[in-house]
Image (cartoon, rainbow, N blue to C red; front, side, top):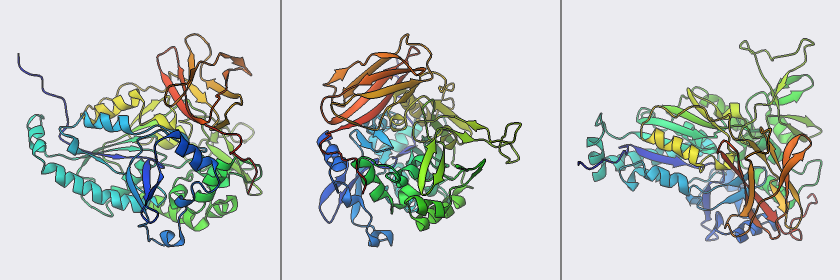
Length: 479
């Protein structure tokens, strides 16, 4: 019997992570400032004053002198950030890509300094992708892989991008830096990319305004206030509820809520130019069924975010009720990016997943593998099954907190588990009904990073990471 040939692509793959998805090394201090392994580092970074001070952009860095911080690799460990919550590592995504190519040399991991503007990282990605494609075409395994494919064509590029990484890929392919790069690209798969921005970016800039917040949230606000990369994620759709109308978030609004008007304007100008860019062979995976911020109200410099937004008719007019009042809709999303911001392009697969798990969940990885192997069919939409999972981003060890499920109307077949990321401390909180929703109360005894896992009767698994702090080290007072 003849030997079965492996179903692998001859193409070159580039993996682009999301914001905070790359390890960063301080070349002056000679130490890693983001992405160390171990929960102890994570707790120290977020729950001690100035734990993340090395991430603050200096005046020289804002002027373009960006050699101090060097991105080293994609995150290999579970991580956590206030508001954005848990991020699963990229190890499974990398392994999936390597299993679909003719040789590991065909896969390029592209870490980048996510503090910087998307435009800067887009230029660096364009240069790196061109070098990678040239090197792979010259690799001995490339020609052998070509001979096993139907068309025997030379390799082209395939980008797999999570979150902000999709915006970086879009910037790399806009023709500014390499006019032939888009033509040399077969496909782009985006996982939860906020093509129209995310309200959470505004909430981060505003954290602590008007109400006390824990130390980790204050630290994130402080380092983000002058971070161009965060301003690149601000919502660009009509998201500000103003009386009985909707409008765009203006640079003046951004300054008033704690951000930087100049960075907001620069981001808006850049993304306006990107509006014409069509990603080659674009396929989008969008998170669904998770409670997600979609609009906001601003009053006296304080942001009130909402889990709903307005919709427009084809002529651009907002949909209103017979009295002329705005109709508000909750389309949900992945907990960070609302569905319509990520569901862009001719082929969209919705999955009931949280944002940080979109690049690691087995169902999402199956979509990645099918695209890399040049399968034109990603399967039926997966947005209806599963459930919504809502947990706090930060809890205190020893204090009870609530897990809430949405989109399920029965306890039958639903399982809930809370475990530390090492899997050594596992508990199964009892699910029950409360306020018309399925809920559970959980308590963890020690500080650390914990994964909440919910399995539904339709065999879907939804996860989210929660950081448990030491109550003695996580202050709640304002600056």
